[in-house]
Amino acid sequence: MGAPITRTTEEAEMTTVIPADERGRVPAPRRTVVQRIRAPRRPRIWFEIVLIAVSYWTYSMIRNAVPEQEAQALRNADWLWEVERALGIAVEQSLNHAVNGVTWLIVTMNYYYATLHFVVTIGVLVWLYRRHPGRYAASRTVLFATTAVALLGYYLYPLAPPRLMESVHFIDTVKVHDTWGSMASGNMASVSNQYAAMPSMHIGWSVWCGITIAVLAAPLWVRILGWLYPAVTLVVIVCTANHFWLDAVGGVACLGIGFAVSCLWYGAPAHRLPRMVPASP
Image (cartoon, rainbow, N blue to C red; front, side, top):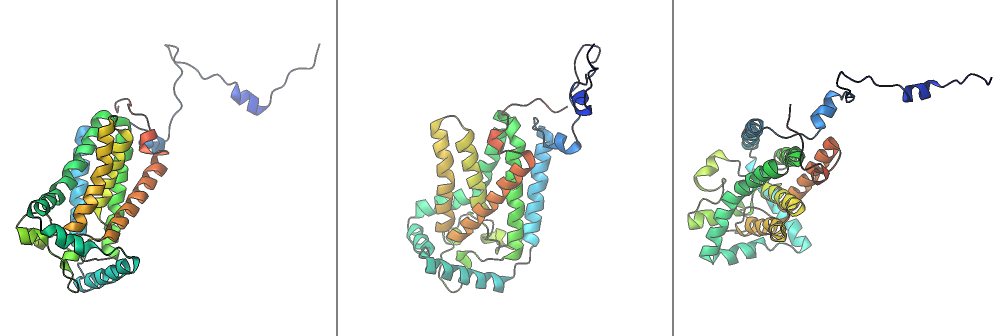
């Protein structure tokens, strides 16, 4: 007879049989709390509505509670303008004055600035919720993290928008044409922090919308619209004198951090997660 067969502890563990239940099903391995939270699942409509409402209310409260620091905000605007002049990109004033001469165009831009920032963003969230539930939470996390970083920017770097500069003449197109194109113009100026121009969340949110649509939408024309939306938004924020070009750069930088946070938490970009997932228990 040969020598008795011996197995190492590692081999024994590999061949351990997991007991099945009465129906012969092998139970799935238990996941940690963090793994359960990170796992893609179908979002609950009531939870998402409350979360978005509370988050936006908190964002607005914090943004408007940041000390306005008018003198510093104006100094920062002058410095930023000089930087853009040194870079050869300080054309905001020329665009602002040129487009202001075309009444129907600038009025359209004012309303675009006031409405689409919210309408398109909410529309994309609803579309993700209905058509890509497995990717919704990761995409929403990008948006929330981007906005949180922006709040830090408002606190650390107060910046006057071009329309409030004293050293350079820009036209506040909302006041001149008596339209409601900005929360920081007209009657709403008293309840909104006018010196929170850096970074631009009009750009941060619109680029998020554009990337999400361009990556996940099927029709080519819809994907093209996805790429056009942030480009048009960039033109609008400059022509209405609400932002500098570099405010837009700040918005994109915040969005990059938002994507990084989401990828680290979920382990992959949103578009690589499963489109459809089981309903939450």
